[in-house]
Length: 436
Image (cartoon, rainbow, N blue to C red; front, side, top):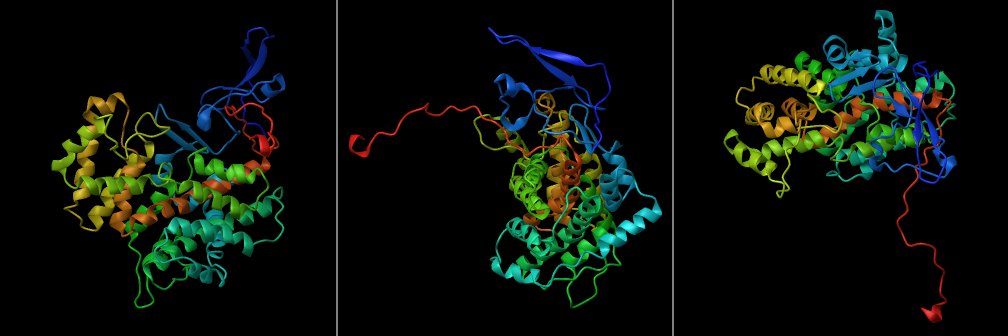
């Protein structure tokens, strides 16, 4: 993997520690974003850095996704997310992430063919679902079933071989939607639906989710487009917790299917992938526009544990660039389904209006994020809240596997081994039992 660092004149940061010689640390510049101080050799001087949450630490080089949170910018391979969401399909984006360029028609057709002919899962896999309770959370099921893929595809994988990595990527992209739909059907007590190779990626997923053997199911093109956009908007988001989990697991040489299971487990957390589910629960709790002032006051009260979900973002200190597209998509879905009196949408629209005008929100840069609208959209399509994070996992699979592939190609990649600031009991010695 060639370096993506700009060939600028080398700059050096000087670290002064009282009583010691100054330590020189190279300053690195990428093609976008802030400069980075290279501290990898600091341990040789007897020091580590302390950075809880790794908020100020770049753990790798990457050419996949760039985010500028202050300006509200999200780029995939250099392309703005809004352009990709409005002008391409999810499989085009998958191709872009995997192969670094957008496909032409012939390349896209070949790629679609590879995906569609790998959507089936081994006939033993449906039996694994019987080990789960019917009321198990679908993400619990996804963690187990995704990890179980490593038991079905346990052939020797040469991670340095591009063809082997591509095969893993194709299988995961093709099979994760099938497993996700099966998790939903299992929770509903309905029969599993086989994938349909004549449908689009999003259309096939909707078919597996909502079709039954009793009658034909025709995919609504508006809902199909909405689902495709949801996949695009959630495809990758740089070094977040779940992507970093995949990279951390992958750094050990673990089976790639197990690495994706690690990503699913991290995504399940309510502070990460569960945010849209939490946002919908909040809107239901508020219930009506008339009750909004009460909850706004509670949100402003630092002594009240209530928090407005769907506002602000760990990275974005401006309007989430995905939220604009998601808002438009939400309106398209509600119009198509003739949902004119949607109380949750009314509450959401009023909350957005307040957030964009109220000094409290403006000063704290608490703008609506993508979760604010995606929960309403998924609910309108007919997807229950417990499946929201599963949809997120389906979309994010391409980001996870692309980062895994990139890591395998990077000669500077090492097994992840963070250090710690030990604050426990200093050295002591065991006292014999009779003296304790």
